[in-house]
Length: 294
Image (cartoon, rainbow, N blue to C red; front, side):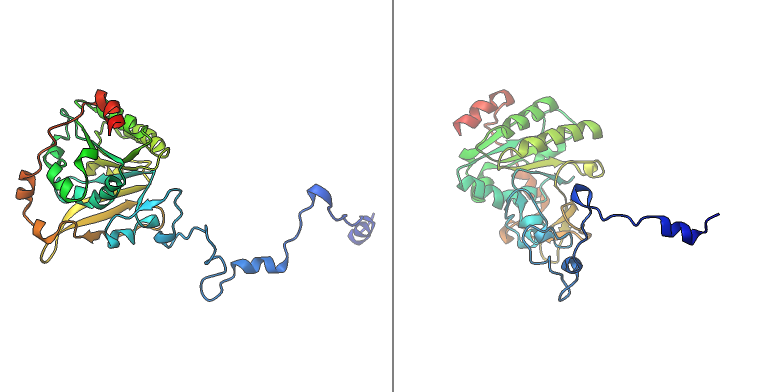
C-alpha cells in the first residue's frame, strides 16, 4: 500500500496552459486602476463613464434641451429634457403651471421652425377635468411659441388620441408633442406607452405625455417621470416638481419652481377663466395633411 506522499511524488505536475484555453494572469498594476486617488479614482475623469451618484453625468443616449429653469436642469440627467425619449407629467390639478413648465423648451422649438403638436383630451372620457387648462393661443404667443406652428388635435375617443400621437411621432420634422393621454388599464397603457417610446426614439423631438397622478404607481417605459403639484410659497405660488423616475440616484425632495412671472401671480380661479381651447382644432384624420403644411 502506497502512502500519500509516495502517490503525490508519482503524480506529474500539471502543464501550463497555452493557446486559446489559457487564462492569462492580469498584471499586478492592473488593479491599481480602481484604486482611489485623491478620493475619486482614476476613472473619474474619463469621458463616457456613467456616475450613478451624479445626475448631471448620467449617461443618456440623446441630447437634452434646457428646461429654462436652472433648479430643474441641475436635477435632470443631461441637464434638461431628453430628445427622442418619452417624458411623463403626472398631476391632478390643471392650471398649476404645467404648460408654463414646458414653455421655454417649446419656444426654442418654435423659433427653430419645428412644429409643435398638441393632442387635447378626449371629448368623451373620465379625464375631461383636464379640459379646463388647455393651451391658450395668446398666452402661447406671449411665451414665444408661434401659434402658426402649433397644431391642435381634439380626438373624440381614446383610440383616436393614440392614433394621433403615433402619426405625429412618425413625422420627421416634428419639434415637440404634448399629449393628454387617456388611461384604460396598467397593462394596456404600458404596451401603448412602450410603442410611443419606440417611435419617439426615431426622431429628435421632445415628447411629453400628460396623465393623471393615479398612474404614478403603474409601470411606465418613460425615461423621465415627473409629478406636479401646487406649492404655496411665502409670496408667490410655486410649482413642486417631484422626480419619480430618472437615470441616476433617486431624488427624495421635490424641486420648487417659480414658473409664472410675478405679474401672472393670480389666483387659480382667474387662471381657469382664461384657459379656453384653440378654436381651430384639427381632427385626427386630418393630422397628416396639417403636419405636411406646417
